Length: 260
Image: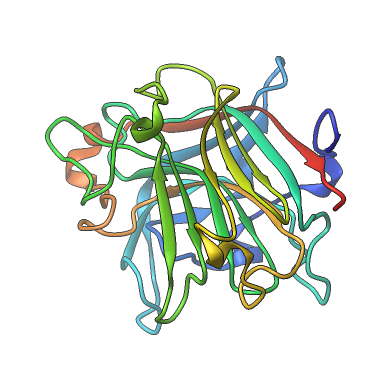
């Protein structure tokens, strides 16, 4: 594989509600929630709003959106698909996720999409509070998930909870690296530089099914809040102490190309 030391910042888009509208979770995308500090660390923050944004009755999702949050991606929202993408290669992030105590409803995510229906969630990590656990999601670990589609029915998915494969936990105590390699013959998941899981067309065929994965993958990086009390938690304005201001800190994102 041919490496790139870092992703060109010009090929990332910082999104806003004016770009994306209202997403399915309980937060409003705000470009002011993304910043870079003097050490070069990117921060995607989610903060409480003084008053909620009310979702139109014609849309599904939480009615009251009590947070504003950061979102970055490599999409062009016009006629083109993406500003940067690759079909095969390695994607890696070094980040500190806001998913320890008093982070109820948080979901930090580094993920890939394409122009088919496939999605690869390289790293997802869920928040919690001691008195309110997320609805069925695993805490203190990160997770990699492959989806064949994320809207409508018929989604088929593979899930790897990193701690089940020897990765350290908790993951919110500092910076860790998460990586995913995809080639025509194998896929691999890495945590802190160690390969923790592999897949092949024989063991996980959907990852190579051209109905779902047959076009370049582009990166997305965001901090969800919500979207429901039963899925990974819906922050309650009457219990704001359950969800402190959230800060998804990213040291770097790197990619490597693979040419079959």
